[in-house]
Image 1 (cartoon, helix red, strand yellow):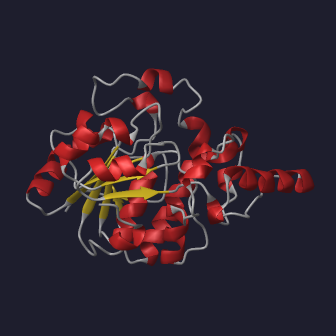
Image 2 (cartoon, helix red, strand yellow):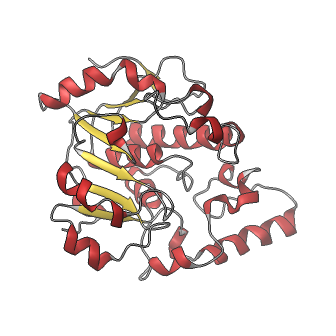
Length: 288
C-alpha cells in the first residue's frame, strides 16, 4: 500500500529508535539494539543491504539506491519476507510504480531527494551556473539557504543532480522533497543537501515520525575503516574512488548540523553511539 510523508508524521512520537549504518562502529551496539528491538522497546531503521549486517528485519527499511545497485524490482522477495515498510527514492530507481504496488502488500513510500521546489535538474543547475557567472563564487543559497551543498568538489559533479532528465520525469506531478518537508515541519532556516549517504535520509524520516531519542550507529563516514561486516570488502575500492568520504566531509558535516537543529526544534535528541566521530553535531552517548 502506497503511503505519503503526511501519513507518517508523528507516527512514533516519543518512541526511541536506532538508525543503523554499516560502519564498523555498528558492532559495538548491534547486540543491544537487536535485544531492545526484539523486546519492542526500540524501533530499528536500517538502510540499503541491511541483511548483510542483521539476521532479522528492521522496523523500517530506508533505501536510496540506483539501477546499478538495489532497484526495487530485484528486492520484492526480500521485502515480502522482511514484512516491514520500505521507503525508497525514485531519483535513480525507475521500477514501475504499478509493479511495486502489485508486488508489495505492505506499506511503501517513495520520496524525492533532489528536485528543489519541484524544478527539474537542468533548471536548478542553470540557476547555480548563472549565480557563479555573475558572482564568481560558490555562495549560492537559492535552494534551501544552504550554500555548502554547492561548494567544490560537489558542484563539479552537479551537487547530486542529473543531466539526462530521467529522474526529473519521475517527479510528475512535482512533489515536495524529503528535505523541504522536514525544513517546513521543523521551521529551521536551511534544509540538508541531496545527501551523500542514505543515513541522512533515515535520520530525517525518524525526525518526521517524532521518534525520541534517535540513536545513530555505524555512522563512521570513513571507508578506510571498512564495514561492520568483515566479509564486505568493496570499501577498499570506494576509499580510493570519486565517492570516497574525505572530499565531501564539509557537506556531510553541514547536513549533520542541519539535521540536529531540525531535531532539536521538534524537541528530539539525537545520540551518536559511534565513539569519537570525526564530525560534530550529534551528542555522543550510549543507549539507556
